[in-house]
Amino acid sequence: MRATMRVDVERTVATIDPNVYGNFAEHLGRCIYGGIYEPGSPLSDERGYRKDVAEMTRRLRVTNLRWPGGNFVSGYHWLDGVGPRENRPHRHDLAWHAIETNQFGTDEFLEYCRLIGTEPYICLNLGTGTIDEAAGWLAYCNCDDSTYYAELRRKNGHPAPYKVPYWGLGNELYGDWQTGHKTAEEYARLAEETAKVLRWTDPSIKLVACGAQRVDWDWEVLRRTARHVDFVSAHFYFRPEPGEDVVTSMLAAPYAAAEYLDVLAGLIAGARREQKIAHPIGIAVDEWNSWHRARKSPLEERYDLTDAVCVASFINLLRRRADTVKIANLAQLVNVIAPIFTRPDGLFLQTIYWPLVAAARYSGPRLVRSDVEVDGFGAARVLAGSVPYVDGIATVDPDAGKLFLSIVNQHPKDTAEVRILVRDASAAGDMQAHVVTGDRSDRTNSFEDPEAVHLVSRSLTPRPGELVWEAPPLSSTVLEIALGG
Ligand code: AHR
Image (cartoon, rainbow, N blue to C red; front, side, top):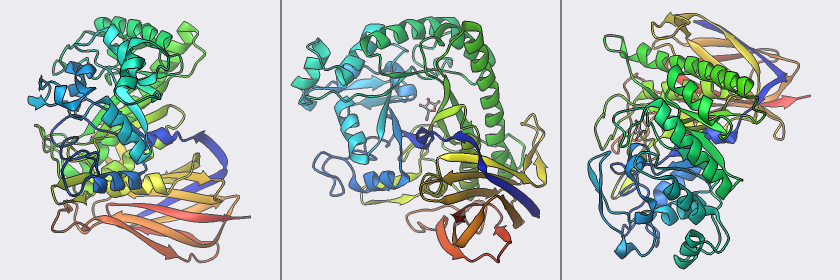
């Protein structure tokens, strides 16, 4: 298969927000307990954080971490998780039918964010929680005055406010699986009033309204909350359509999601125009991943090469929409539908870890104009009717003088010969290819075979004036190119 990728390094399309490399940790299965946090383990530090997990998270360059849920948060009361650990109550977690011991709470989460060098993003309980409770949580985290919750934080050993920048106005309240499920009108009113009070408590915060990947809900939410919020969320989980070929169906799924991102961007533009709103409202894709096998808690999905390619193409699709998508959070970080998989004596990295690392490490902040000319495959679930076999985006890091081409070959069998035409720039010397691929679409990693699919970097010396990348079938590659004069 042949493809041509044209790149114009001088034409910046948008600046990619670093927050698209975010992640998510929920009190669910072994994500927190036995994942991030395992006091007493020889692999943990004195505070109980798993050092190996923290290290692999740092390598992922996670820019923001959403917590504590997910479905869990819609029944969570934050006061249960602060103060002396021995006094913290055990509660039923009705989202995942577990017992929550509250040993990991707000202070443990915020200390963890510091440990891994990431910005915290707290999702509030708008299921069973109250406006007062939400405002109290914000005051506990961010206020530096003499009020009750700021004092409580000091009493708990944390004199300085944490200054948590991102706050989510609830999780998936449109679904009856949610504790405190609401209609669009009920949710929008509660979100509007909560947003007002939160802003009055701390005007510096950024608020995320809960979207539903549905026009009726999202429009109602925007109608009510647009004046008060900075983002509207969308969640996307990729799974094959029943009766379709698993590989091509999985690879089409991110394109259907991306089509909705364009719809949501239109709704946001419409709301801003109608309500004469000057401030920008971005999209927060604050849960996304491939997820189709382990549907019940503890959701310990094992990922294969197809999932890795699906994840790689969605990161491209998110960044291609850098003008509207400002936050994204892979769901989730450890063990639960996650790139990092632990057991008491170690961890291995799932296939999807590698495209995530490649995207975060090998890319620049400037999305530049590019297009790929290539054949596609039929896909009933996308309005466009087909999906290109090769997906590509180009980013530039002007400080490093580098161009990064993120190229995903979605063909299950054929190598793609990608001819690359870069306008108004020349490649200076060697380039690096960072490649994730494997020998079979269903190839997985495991404790026994941890590197069946991983990231391999090598140098290439292109012939002068000719840049061709032979992208293996089912692969994701970043070409790192030094730009010359
Ligand atoms: O990430 C797993 C679950 O998926 C989250 O708790 C929920 O928000 C979504 O439905």
